[in-house]
Amino acid sequence: MKFLHIGDLHLGKFMGNFDLYEDQEYILNQIIQIAEEQSVDGVLIAGDVYDRTIPSEKATILLDNFLIELVKRKIKVFMVSGNHDSDDRLNYGSRLFASNEIFISAVFDGTLHKESLADKDTQIDIYMLPFVKASQVKHYFEDKKIENYEDAVRVILAHTPVDKNHKNILIAHQFVIGKGTDPELGGSEGIGTQSVGAVERIGYDCFDDFDYVALGHIHSPQRVGRDTVRYSGSPLKYSLSEVGNEKSVPLITVSAQEGVRIELIALKPKRDVRHIKGKFEELLNHIEKPDDYIYATLTDEDSIRDVMSIFQQYYPNMVQIDYDHSYAGELEEADISKIAANKPFSELIGEFYQMIYGKEISEEEMKIMREVAREAGVINEAD
Image (cartoon, rainbow, N blue to C red):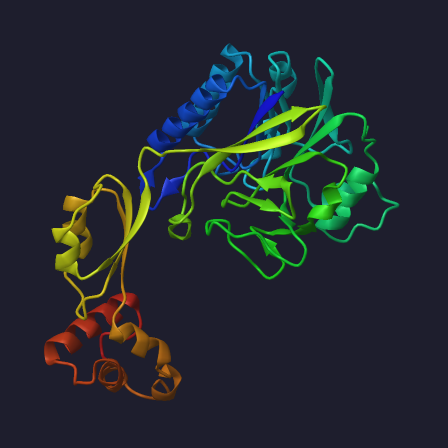
């Protein structure tokens, strides 16, 4: 039997100020085409279906259309919630959807839900673990020591009978790590010392009883610990840090004879996300793929007036522009605290300007700085 593993759709997401509706619709249609061409039996969706807990109308339409097209092709769907999803909203209508072989597990109710499939001599059990927190799991296992996310997941799995004579697949949305290593982040998850997007680390050995683990949460596609514990990654690049990612969808073939075979099928976006760097004139003299989402870094020493509006004439989907020049380095090294104490505004600004630019501020520039400071409430009219 064959399955596609996807996750982190983040339907309804924006890139800067740009609505990604068309891009997400395009990539979902591509996934449907792959599913049809590969004659898959099911699609595994590993959470973060929506970008927000209260999704927009357009986001719900995207998911609705996607599921309808899969149902038309008699492709089963197995979907769990992620930390970006609203459990209750994603779970709404799940019993009705199940009649069309769309199986949703978005609210943990003390049991790890399972759906079983059979094909000739292959029996496959698919377990669906929605995003869970330790506090949720404690409610159902009050006599167990549950202090963190890993404790919670281990307790759930310990109370789940898994038939080793079957092929077992788990779908989960958690921050899973290998032996002493963290996954490579896509950049749009957010990271803390112990977590990504407020999700604590869980060792991949939690899932030793499963032949394949379909993970969501990390946006860079990759294996964790072993080939069959895998993040599909997000189907689109959602941040500057993902520029170097090659997005793909894992095609999982499961059989009693061969076990699990994995093939990564490349995804091609409607518009790519790219980072360009160089001097202003150089970049405008070498325009490539203007419809892509562009992050630009300018190396000019002087800031350029109305630079965003100029660039958007050539790159209409310009997301962000920043500078990489000598002033930036000097600013990082400057100890501003030493010049900020008990000094009038004009003296403070003058010394700061001298430190950064190596010259005195002009009267016109000082006048502008005063006007801005008054509007911001930093100084009053008398200053």
